[in-house]
Image (cartoon, rainbow, N blue to C red):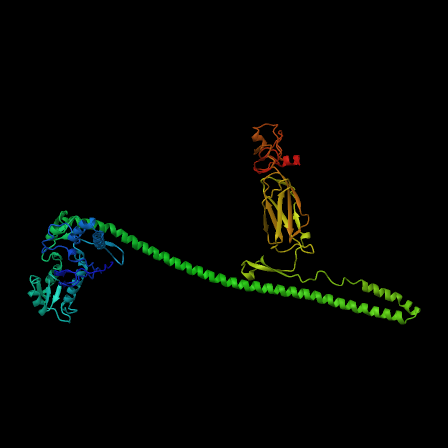
Length: 599
């Protein structure tokens, strides 16, 4: 509960029944059980007792005092002087601040559960003692005495002094000296004190000792008065003086009359609260089960992640080695081709050089007859040198690319984990790339069309990978030149799909470029026409749709003897519902017969 700062100084002697401590005049009053210290408000904040005659007949504690004479005088002087008005305002503000302090003392807040408890009339001292805990402590001491496990000590002595008597009224153990002092004091002289030996003689006496812990409660504010009344307005047990002073005008009844009603009410409330505890315990067990499952699931998922990441790292390493091996093979292949051509060129050079040197020397020093004698041999030799291939093969180039955004083929060595990044020696040539427009020269309005682009390299061979950046422009070929939305999807096998849906009839122009170069045939001209409706009936057969008419016809291949149309179970029947105009089995299709006639 919240501790309220401040101290209340009480001039009279008050006996604290909870801690068995007597606070004398001139010392602060505290309450350890609730951790609360009241504000120091002066003598006017004390509650009335049976000894205070000035407060008898009042319904509530005496209000905070203010200097009525000074305030009255100051109010008379307000017309004459502004200084006296300021004094009045100050006194009023002080009274308001004190009343706020009193309001703060009306409730106590538990520091553990934050539950607010209203302060009863009479202050903290009127809060009930934890009798259950007191009984448990006393019962424990009784059981210890019965079993002879431990000896009893005096509760008032500082040292460990064996107790010889027990005060039934105060519920404390007393040694011989404290017992005599207890009997000499006026406030405790009438207490019921029994000997420890008498209490230990029989179990009946022990039971009596246990039951003696249930005496009539004494009022903490009015010593000597038993609390036999119950204030129904404040829900507080009180004595006769409290009824006259603090609870004047309240609805009050005796404890014997109201105990049955409130005991029944408490029992009913207890029975209603038991399911809450059971539900809470059941919910706690459920939460524990859920928590266990969550922990198990998290551990399982964590293990799966660890295994997957280990496999992923392994696949990455395999993919890395594969790429490096491809680079090494490409290097080896190209270098081998270069060495072969180099060897061929060196051989060709040596042959040509020998023929040239021999021919030059023969021409310079040989006679005419000698030259003519070698003409046939030398010419054939020169023809042999001319038959060599070009000096440099155009296929040999430094073309080698790494495409990190292209997905690599999945392999078992990579645990079928998708990897990205491939090595290629192919270079796209836009002039060799083509667009497959077969069947799409007649586009239909509001029907999706898909055109396929095939990418090729310098040799006209299809590329085996995707990842190219393709730019396209699609618009109507009219005065508005209105563009038409489209999408380009990469199949990752060297082909790309351009998909669009014409929204009106007319001629469309499609331009496709790769690396700012038009592909073969670009720009393309396409025509969009409206969808031709069916002119026939979507029926199961001509016999049923015409109600047995022999003149009814159908475009399907069904033959029914004596009828021009088709019939169930006869040869050529599609076996399902179809259009009589074009024999199409799709209900939401375009009439092909009408298109053939129009085209």
